[in-house]
Image 1 (cartoon, helix red, strand yellow):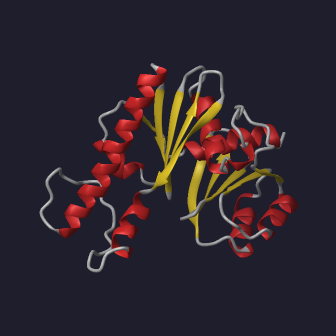
Image 2 (tube, helix red, strand yellow):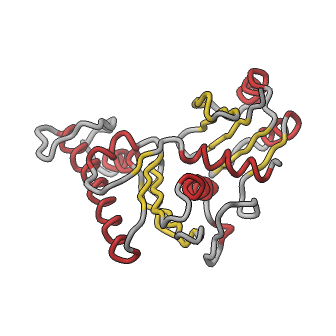
Length: 242
């Protein structure tokens, strides 16, 4: 059986997904990007193809070991993509956003798409029905907002996110969770409404690690796909590692 391993190195976590022809067979969070960690995956699955999306200064030896053991592709603005990027500086678009856009057009062809990544940052990525990634926005993610409340105040604690929050909170912890989580949900709904006023009919797809905390509090009609970035990476790998 032929395997492809897709690596996503983000600001908060380094993750991987293992694919075969039938789809994802395993997802995992890597402890680090050391050679033993990568070699363990290679030894287990003997991948034919690998691809890396990285928005951090990762260990460059990872690229060498993946090249040695597979057909490897490093995602960047020069990659063959199922989208075009008619923006001023396409080289500045994050690899994660390219992968999300590629996944979106693969699974929702012929549609205007607002693809929202909920990770370290919240990224809005608008792809029109002509497969053009025309831009979006970046704002602080859930964990960043929670950490900032602790960092910039004298007495507020660092709170772990929870999906169950109510409109009216009753103590410090629930006040923070209500303010941050519902605030983000209302923010996202507001952006979606503005995109709707400008572009009319389009699909909204949410993905990323904080999907579980936010989707249930949103009033907009959305699709939720926590593995969209990996699906996009796999589609890009199939073209660039052919």
